[in-house]
Image (cartoon, rainbow, N blue to C red; front, side, top):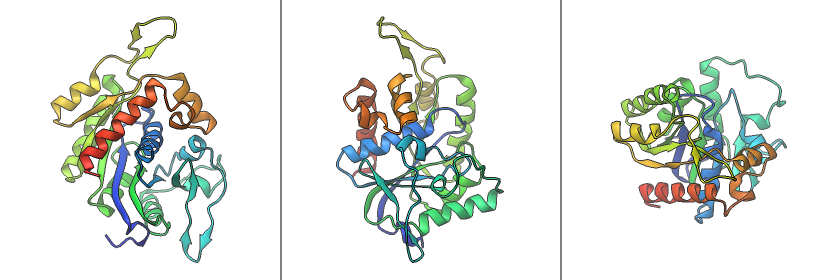
Length: 256
């Protein structure tokens, strides 16, 4: 692979979607924490150059230090974390064309001193453009977790992303259906705001494992906004249990 920064990383888990707004970063952050809870040394790389949300969700704002040309990742909640959002003002946009984005992702893989990691979770930007292609080409042994919501407008874009990874012969670990339903605390009824079962049906159609359903959870949203992810703030909640089950399935698939 030729990337010094990740030469001691055993497994790479890219979290992807074909569409923005499906909660991909939320899944990436809490999956990384759930994997850490399984006893693994885990890193979290924010490769969403245009919309780096991991600094907010992890409650991190300081600039990483450097040792010579190497960048030292920040550490919090047991994870090593790097995002381009650490290097710029939070309101400054990235007005970059594709080649610059690809170069930035390669730099985060190569220059960051990740050290010994059992797995590096990579939060990819939405879509099938340069960042996803670059990551797949740089790390040919990466595995992908696909995030979708139940409604067809999301599934249509996610199918394109799945087909892109299949065409590039990138391993697909499975599909996570986010925002599957909302359950009011005053009722046992599940309100399926965005439809029902779309992710599970797509997993059958495209022959990809189905990893689980994540509800619309107010605590999940609050934790992300406050910089205290659900897996830290409410580790015994029903939604946290879902992330733990997803992590166990990922662990089994990777045989780690």
